[in-house]
Image 1 (tube, one colour):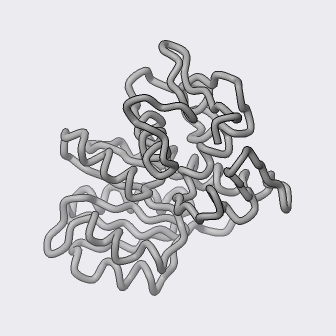
Image 2 (cartoon, rainbow, N blue to C red):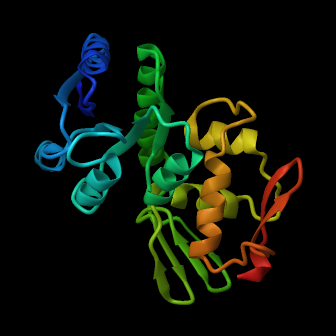
Length: 233
């Protein structure tokens, strides 16, 4: 079995040792970084399969590091934080994070989340039909290139944002529950609390010009989920 390359950016030495040791025993090659100053350079140079990035670090926080690497690193990024502020999670997701885990986290839970991210990525690469696209009015989606165009303008979406939009558009005029969206896109069961999908819908509406106060293109169906309306593009 080929080991998975990971970079763990965590300034708490005990947590870093605990998590890296557990991951290494489960077929990960882990590089530990304890300071934010040189994290971006190491990530860009190594190009790991996945980065586990703490938000609160000396010299450069996780958000700063993400901005430094986002155009030069194309693997998965999972944020860690001990903060209880929901705004941290919202900001991380808006920036394009693939997942977000609060500390303290049990090593086996982190391992499961990492495997889920990597498995989902592999499944999407395998399953995505070459050249498959969706067109509704001025909206054009290319699943192979992960490209979204609206009225001939290129809309910059993260991979996870595109995947959510593609799933909604693929089931146009069908209400998709949060349970279904979380299970399909993240490979985990919806716990009734997780706001990841809701936050990404808010981001999509903003990027696609849908009125956040009175959305018409991606609408919320109370107590049921989200509905993509094809004729309004």
